[in-house]
Amino acid sequence: MPRPPHPGENAERVRQGSFTDAAGLAHAFEGASQVLIVSVDTMGEECVRQHRTAIEAAVAAGARRILYTSHMGASATSHFQACRDHAATEEALRACGVPFTSLRNGFYTTSALHFLGNAVESGRFALPEDGPVAWTAHADLADATAAILADEGRFDGPTPPLTGGQSLSFDDIAALATELAGRTMTRTTVPDDQFREQLVSQGVPSEVADQLLGIFAAGRAGEFATVDPTWPPCSAANPSPWARCCASNCPQADPRRGSAGCRYRQSSPCRPPGQGQADRRTALCPRAEVS
Ligand SMILES: NC(=O)c1ccc[n+]([C@@H]2O[C@H](COP(=O)([O-])OP(=O)(O)OC[C@H]3O[C@@H](n4cnc5c(N)ncnc54)[C@H](OP(=O)(O)O)[C@@H]3O)[C@@H](O)[C@H]2O)c1
Image (cartoon, rainbow, N blue to C red):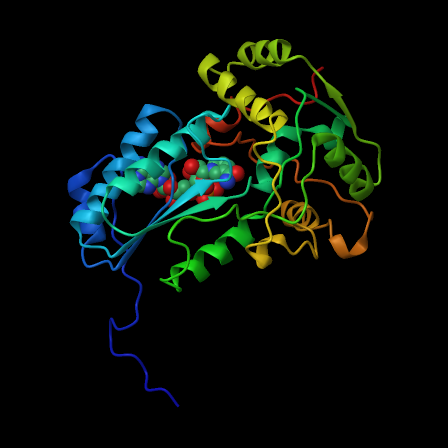
């Protein structure tokens, strides 16, 4: 039988640090052999600046490996601002002199739910033309991250896309939601300009509206379509990320019950991708049900 740990042994140590405070990060990262940098929930120059601060702090702390939560389709030429930011951060990682692993995470399944707004109540949602996206469950990405952290030799540089097992358009999602909810869900297409106007009229800053439209432009260009088998825990679609996402957002929707009564949690925070602050969530919610 293993001996009981001494006081403090094996305990997690929690240290506060912010990517806006280099001095604080020096303390937070002190003694770390590996540093996992979770990308911040903003986009643009400030986002990349904060990532650079975190990378520099990890290097200064003597970390022998840096991991970073990037995104599938990260590219300087992406239609989506966040993917351009991830590409810029990966450049900083390449230049930092320390081995790194950039986790090219698939698009969060929960992001698609946010775009549906209150479609469960209205039975319809209107969004710009899109393309297939390899939606991926948070939980699978968390498992992948933990396993890759524990295996230091694995993935030098950017990983292949860590994706779910299916690429789905919003038409496909409407069909799935219809099946899971047991009632018809209709998806209509609105022109980009009209969608942008709706967002801005609802108080979404124009810069954010453009960023959200960038997701659809990138989707149409196929930037998120790849289903990659590299990480089987992500790509195993049994049960599918969608069924699980639905279940975890609504306890009464058990995917094993097939089409029995799925109703997405109606009070779920509406949070467009990349906008994490709770006080901004409602204000930035695309009203997908308005056509
Ligand atoms: N792959 C995708 O589809 C997708 C979609 C949306 C977003 N993302 C990216 O993935 C990231 C993680 O997503 P998530 O769902 O895990 O988000 P999350 O639960 O909000 O986690 C983000 C974490 O970053 C921390 N953080 C934010 N700003 C920070 C700063 N300046 N300094 C230090 N820590 C900071 C937050 O700390 P607090 O909790 O203390 O605020 C939080 O712990 C997002 O931030 C975004 O960059 C990816």
